[in-house]
Length: 577
Image (cartoon, rainbow, N blue to C red):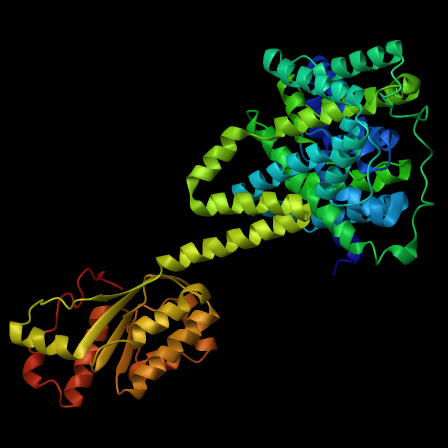
C-alpha cells in the first residue's frame, strides 16, 4: 500500500519541468530573446499601472511581473504564456485592499496559490472547457468596463475617493473633478490613450505604450507640471522575501477572498493559454501544469511584496505575434523587468499617474472585441442573455459572482433546451397481416408510445402529464429503446405514471429497456411495475404479442384475432428494439 507522500509525489511529478522544455528553449533562442524584450517593453507600463490600481503601489506590480512572471514561465503548462499583474485581478483586489489592507492581499495571494496547486494535483484543469463562450465574452466585457472606470480618478487628476464599488468611486471622482478641474491630467491620459490606440492600428509591432509614457514623462518634467502627479519613489531592487505579513488568525476570515482570487487566476490563466494555442500551430498547453505554475507564482510573489498574478492575455498575444517559440521568451521578459527594477527605479518613479491611467484606458478599450460580441449576440437569445448578465454582474457585483451567475444561467438554459428534446409520441399500430377488422380491434385496446430523448428532472413533469392523459385503453406499451438518459427523478415520475394508469385498470408494458435504465428504474422500485407478470420484452413486437395474450385471457380479444402475429407491430419499429 502506497503512502500519502508517495501518492502526492506521483501526482506532482508530471507537473514539473522536463527535458523537453529545455530542448524547446534551445531551438531558436534569438527569436525568444527578441520576443521577451518586446514583451518586457509592453509589460512595464502595464505592471506599474496595475500595481497602482490594486492599491499596493507600482513597486508591487513590478515585483509581481518579475517573480510571478519567471516562476509561471518555468513551471506553467504553456510554452508561450506570459504572466503578471492583470486588470481582472486588480478588479478583485481593490475591495480586498479596502477591507483587509495590503497585508490581507498578500495573505490572500499565498492562500490562492496553495489552492491552485491543490487544483493542479486534483487534475481540475480540464474543466475549463465547460465554461461557455458567452460567459467568457461577458466576463471580458465586464472586466474591460471595470478597468476603464478604475482609471477615472487618476485620469482626472483627483485623489481616489473612498469606496470599493467602482461605479460609486467613479461618480465621486467626477464630482471632485467638477469642483476643481485638472485639465493637465486629462490631457496626459487622453494623449497616451490616443497614441496607443492609433499606433496599434498603424504599426502593431511598435510598443507605443512605452513610447507614449516616456514622452509624457519628459514633457511633465521639462515643463514642471505639478498637476501631473508622478507615481512616486520605487525601491532599487526587490525586497528580501518575508512571511511577516502572514497572520494565522486571519486565515479563516480571508478564505472567501482567497477562493475568489484562485478561481479568477485559474479562469484567466487557462483562457489566456487557450488563446495562445489558437494563435499558433502545433502548440497545446497542459491545463493542470498551468494551474501548478500559477499556484507557485502566487505563493512566491507575495513574499516579495507582489500582488496575485494570472496569465495575461494581452502580453501573451504580443509574445506570440513577435515570434516566441518557448518559455525562454517569458523568462527573458521577467529578467529584463528585474534589471529595470534594479537599474532604472529613479527614472520610472517620475512617470505621471495620468499617463499610466491612459495606458490602462487604452488597454480596456482594446480588450473589447466588437466582432465577437456582435456574433455572440446574434447567435441565439440565450447566448445574448448570458453575455449581458455576466457583463452586468461583473460591473455591479464582482468577477467570481459574475462567472457563477453566468454558469448557472447557461446551465439552466441548456437544461431547458435539452428538456425540450424529450418527446412522448403515440405511434400507430401497423396493419401488418391483420385484416381491417382485426386492426381496428387491436387499436381500440392497445396504444404504443415511443419515448425519445432524455427522461430527467427537467422534462419529467411534462412527461407525467402527457402519459397519464391517455385515452380509455386496456394496454399501454412504452417503447424505451430511444431514451438517451434517465435520472432518479425521471424514473420516479415514470413509476408514478404507471401506478396511476394501473389504478385505472390499464396494464403497462415496456420494451427495449437498456442496462443503464434498468438500474435506475430498479433503484426506485419502478422496474417491477413495467414487467407484466414478470416478463421483460426486448422488442415492441414481443410486447404486442404479450398484450394480445393479456387481452385474450381477459376475454377482450377472441382467439380468432390470433391467426397471425404482426410483422411490424408499430410504424417505424426497429427489428430488435
